Length: 387
Image (cartoon, rainbow, N blue to C red; front, side, top):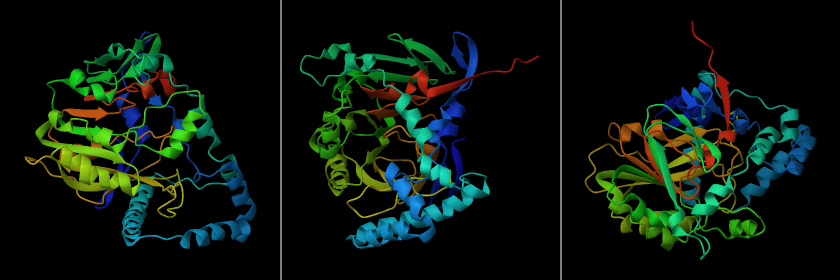
C-alpha cells in the first residue's frame, strides 16, 4: 500500500511505494518483469534551497546565524489570521503524522553536511535527465492555430496486468484497466461524450505570470496555462454522476482559491465540501521549505472538494493533511487513490483532467496524458525464476 500511517488528522503516503505496488507482473517483450519508478527521484534529503543558499547554511550552521536571520526576516512579513489558522492546522497534523511514520520505520533520514552541500543533486539530476517525449505531444498540442485538432489519440489497457506499449515509436508502461485520451481538455465533450464518473480530479494549469515569463525563455513547450474563466467553462456537470465528487488541485493564491469555491463549483452545480493539504517533506520528515508568508512559496499545496446535491457517500472531512516526499519532477502530484477509497463507491469510475500520468482503473485526459509513463522513468528488475 501507499499509505504508511494514518491519524485523525490525515495520512503519510509513499508515492514510490505506490508505483512499486501497481507495476508488478508487467508484460514486456522480454517477459514478465517488475517495475518501480526511479527511486532517485524521491531522494529529497534536505529542504529545497538554491546551491549558494545551501553553502551558506553549512557555513553558518554552527553559529545559527543563517537560520535565525531567515526566521527573523519571515516573522516581519504580514500574515493574515486565516493564513495563520491554516498554518496551525498543517503544523499540528504534520507533527503527529511524522511521529507515527517514524514508529513505522519511515522518514528517519538525518541529513549530513554532505547532504546539504549536495543539495538534493541526485534527485535534481535524475529529473533533469528525463526528457519529455515531445514528438508525441507536438501531434496533439493545439496551442498554435495551425495545429491539427484531429491528431489527438487514445489508448488504454483492458487487461488486469500492466503492460509496456510502443506508442508512436516510444516505450511507455501502461497500468491495468485504464484508458487515456491525448487531447486538449477543451475537446472533452467530443472525446468522452456519454460517459459519467463517480470522481473527477482536475489539476488545472493555473495562469501564472512568473511561470509564463520563464517558459517564454525556454525552447521546450509546457502545457498551456488557462485563465479562471476558461477553467470554469469545462462542462464538469455533464460528466459527473448524481452522487459524484470533484477534487481540484489549487495553488495557494487567494484568487485561485476563491475561483474554485465561488466560480467553478457554482457553475458546475456543486457544493463546496472540504480542503485538504498536501504537505511536502524530506526523507527525514522536514518541510521542504519554510512556511514563510502569504507571498512566498509554501511547502504545501491544496486540493479542494465539491460534491453534487444527490451525494450518497461520506464526504471528505475538512482540513485533512496528506504528507509525502515529493517527486523531483516539477508539479508531479502524489496518487490519492487509496486515501480516497472510503469516500467513493466500490470500483468507482474515475476521471483525471490535465493528467500527466495514468492510474489503474481510471480514465485520463490531457495533452501530456502519458508524459510520466515514459519507460525512462522506471527501473526494471527481472523476476527470479521459480522452480
